[in-house]
Length: 72
Image 1: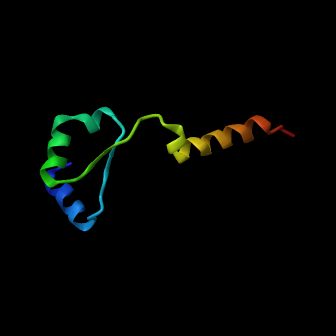
Image 2: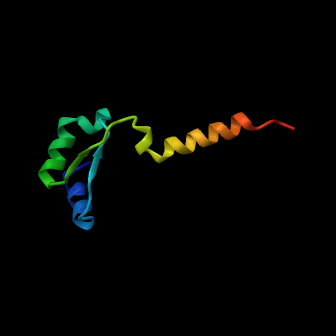
């Protein structure tokens, strides 16, 4: 993101918190520098933490339903 976009978004969303899941794009020096320059707080989030990721529960339920389903 361009610094001006980050700044405008942050000004309109004062409670913005950047969740870093250690994805390679989030760790780029330029991204971290731009976020720090604007003052966006950083929250390090552990990647692949299924108990904190609601979508993982949805996928588990869907898989269970598909496993239980019998075609007619």
